[in-house]
Length: 227
Image (cartoon, rainbow, N blue to C red; front, side, top):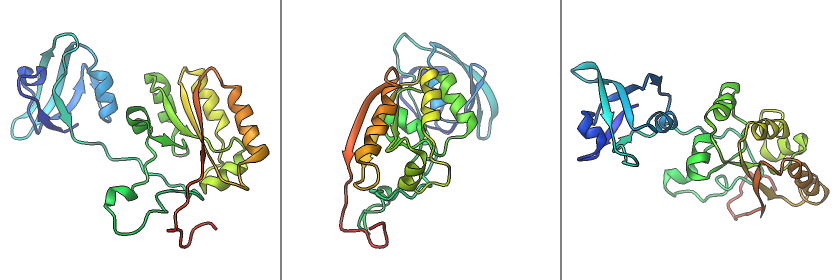
């Protein structure tokens, strides 16, 4: 993890961490991303292993007061991108010529925890589900849309099987709380399909913190998209 900045008079500066350092481990825990860093630096006594350009690897101890910020800004992690082709994708409906960040389709469970972004869970790998359960990455904001796998697959245009209930049940059993979202597309997941989805989610009520039913939003920028 690359350190971009170290705040003046912070615990990190007192301990000797500098901008440009690459943090390798914290208290012996290797780091994959900023989320690992947040979990690893929750303690007040920290041991950093790091690499510094021109100086090689090193080891420092950082002590901070209870509740004191560490004072480290890390380089941002690459964003996990969405590979679905949702019938109603609002990114696809943006006009041309706007800033590039408005065309980014994110599907990142880390951002779901940190920023409340909704995700479909279609790109989760087995080790990531295990990580979510082990680190209690909760709550997650999940775009359910439909619990019927075939209908969900059609709505999302996803490569997988569209199954969501089994994943939700596993997360719920592991103590993960869920904010669910249903974007209602007339003729696709409304009526009896919507009622089925709500019934299925009701069986997971202990883990479902909220269900947002959202009417599909359409713009005039839909050339080549689903009618």
